[in-house]
Amino acid sequence: MSYVNMGQILKKAREERYAVGAFNILNHLTAKAVIDAAEELRSPLILQTSTATVKFHGVDGLIKQLIPMAEYASIPVAVHLDHCTDADLAKKCLDAGWSSVMFDGSKKPLDENIRLTKEIAAYAKKYNATVEGELGAIVGVEEDVIVASGDEALAKVDECKIFLEQTGIDAFAPAIGTAHGLYKGKPKINFDLFKEIEEISSCPLVVHGGTGLEGDVFKQLISLGAAKVNISTAIKIAYCSGLKSYIENNADKVEPLKLDQHVIDVVKNTTKEHILLFGSANRI
Ligand code: 13P
Image (cartoon, rainbow, N blue to C red):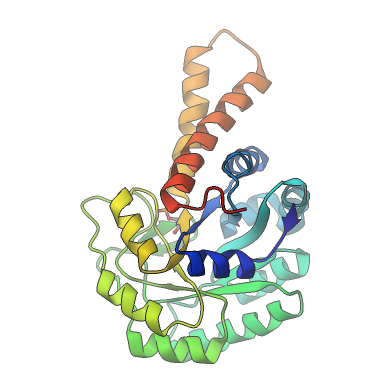
């Protein structure tokens, strides 16, 4: 259907109160699995790439696989760079063809985060690409970005206001108590804070740390306006468990395409479960 940026996808999601899944893909196989899932459920899709995945494949090597897949898909697909702390890499990805990037300056002082995020937002405009920014600290490990437990700082409403006004970003991820990776206990999510930030936000809000959140937590956040939900760990788990289970059950076989198909099916099922929870099915 089309290779798009996140603008239209998230605007509609915010208006109609559903969320679009941003699934961190690792390679061609996982990209195919999440696209297949979204096509089957007629959902818009954000193919998300961590900076570690970009470094593994190379900037051009990765985007040259993903853009044709997005263009060929029968649904709108954005390709978004996740948690990029390096302004030069974010610009390289925009030059290469990413339709969206997240600049993560959340570990920097507010004025420095604003300056760099604003710079990336201006740079992205010339490509009609979109930019996500972050305030506060989301605990856990997301590939290269590590925030130790105890270091978490929820976003502050007055700072969010300044950040949003000055950066002109298209999507905003405030820290509200969710965490990257697997939750060790029940997450302490500040729904009131999320609601307050949503009400003052000019752009759609993003929830990070989607893996392991309960269905009613997603429901509540989406009813409060969450328009994008990031899912990474669940895709990694599905990918590795798909590989392991096929090999364990077919130790005597040498059939790579059947192995790939099995892995695709496992990743696709995980993706479909999330799309159904987010309410983005049948929105095309
Ligand atoms: P999970 O690994 O918890 O799904 O978090 C993903 C994420 O927020 C990526 O930015």
